Length: 634
Image (cartoon, rainbow, N blue to C red):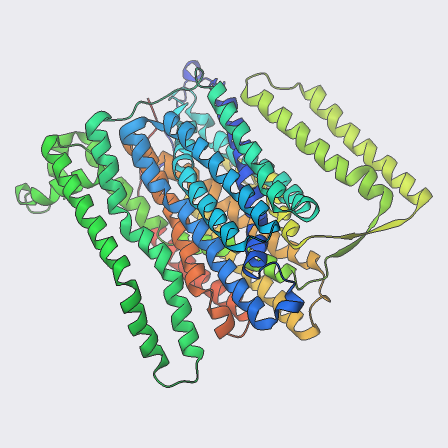
């Protein structure tokens, strides 16, 4: 497994150890936006299940209705996730070719805010008993949020990388780790607070608060507009508009796949479970009859996209991925035997433009197996929550330690960490004395709480909410990222044996499989002893394994995708990275009916563990042959 390390400047006089001035605004925006997104998503599965049950209790609704509502909620949740990570492909083209990253991020953030408002309105309507209108409002909100994410997701990561030059390029790895830290900072507080808001004040408030944070994120981003590097789009104007329209229509088959896939799987599985002869055949015929308009729409989208692409190339041939690929196909006869397929492009477009498509293809091939990882990871907010609902959610905690230290200390430590982080990236770091003093206060506070607990005694009974369990994930991320750096990455770097990005990703994929082995074993135990007897803290073990795998795969993948992308294709390759998440969530939505067919969650988890092992083995084989090159802004 190999990839070329970044060619960072080695001469001391050429190094700049300061972070670019726009970084604090971009990082602050991301923290608030992630609170908004994960806060909404944290309660989405549970809210959808209740909505599809008509807000009846599970006991009164009956087993069949609960099963159908859970299946529909699982499919809707993962199809929403799939859309969130599909639209970035279109958003990337919009940013790279027509509007630029900054303007796309700002304007689609406003769309995002409207989507959050629609969700809050839907929650209000549901509480009033207007179920059909509430469902429509929720779907509209989810669509708007997916579109908003389409502009934000591929552009924010690329935008943060655009702030760096060759002088401070050695900080790129650090900033992506900081970026991921702040994402999970927002996610942690959202995971803890939003379920409480949902239980105490209802869906309208629980969806509304994340909407307010999204508006704040937009404001913070706008405030940093004059301090951020804004790479202009190329080519812009009419040509950029044609690029955007052609790409949008060419994505039509993926949109159709995301929408139709789950419905097809649902019908086939129900037919397979039926005792009637020929049920599967009749289901297949019904699918063909019912879904042919979608297939026609996909074909029409491809045709319109191809026509727009050809028109654009006739006006002026560009050096984008498909243009260079098409040019090399059309001029393949100009190559001599044994010469590179991409040789005609070098003479026509220049060295870097000709390197673009093969670089993108190499990364896409390696990333092709990452979709299976996302199929596993994103279930921590759906099927893992479903499992948590079957577990003992009661905690008995020492009163003084819990309320007098642990909860306030976690909040205080997180807030201090955020202050420390922002002063660092603002190039005004806190002194070592201040940092050590803060740590000493936290430790002393804890010792005092232990003494008071010993004197006073007393315990408190706390009932966790199922959706709160996944708060372990972002909390662990904020611990695991620095731990991996200090305990593994830096010692290996000092020994001259740095862990290559693709090696990290491969290890992470195998760990994801082990995490699902863990939840499968827990589910088998639940089935053996009955619901409510296995404690939910057992989920901490697979959560820790899954979170470690996330850091190894996702943080590394963001860094790898950006550094391996040519300058003109950085947002585009981020879009391809995010399509892996789309494919993973479509896979979950497609296989969701197997939970019933296979006999329960345990078998469902075992199936995904096996898929992950196979995907990881293929990834290792692909990574072993990868040879890349690092590209950074000037």
